[in-house]
Image (tube, rainbow, N blue to C red):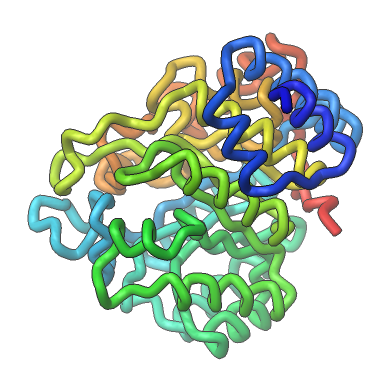
Length: 348
């Protein structure tokens, strides 16, 4: 069994076993990464051409009721600076984004009890009324089936809920006892059932992660077939118990991007802020490895640094919405084009 042969088989069948993914991860050398990226780029161009879709990221709250052990805004971090955008501030972010050319807004935040179903539904309805040509994506954590249903009825199009790890034992090492792997999986199932364009995702290089854990993440995405997958390197935060744990590597993250693209050929796959944080050239490298989405930050500059999931988060340069022209030029220079489009998934 050879790594190159497995990459070829993944391209043509979109299916590998957990063991085969693990073999690739454990044996991959630079030549294999380059080969996987080349194949992933071919596949992405088949379905999306050279288009790269932009999403306007609005980080609506740094309050969170959860205490995930790796996260800088977990409720147990007494050093975190908390903020919460008002609905009017969020709408202003959307207005700014629409003027810049964004046609998808991603409302992301901690699991903040302030944002009740009523508040969120009213907000979603206002966004859709003001910007009927735009999609609304939510990334607000675990909620009940009934809550998700209300948000869908209000007009939300997509929901991103990263599973973080597809191995229950590993999940338990990263989260407090009151959070459960089974509930995270149930939430993803509920989102699919309700007709959301659904996104999952995972961290590369998180504490206690083995090659087998990462292989199971890839296998899980292969079989779930989500419309979106947000994956990026783990980056430590200074106020967590994992503060001295090394960040996930660029090479392994790029390999995972390529493998996800080969297994899920129509998927919407972001080159994430975390990737841009560990490498100045992370966004273009992610695009070349198979990603086709970027998410510049529309959050007000006055609070942007306080949404501190991990240390030294990139929130300026090509990660800032106000510098969109810089990002467009950077992406154009490597042969791709940022398009003004909702960028709906072709995933079936």
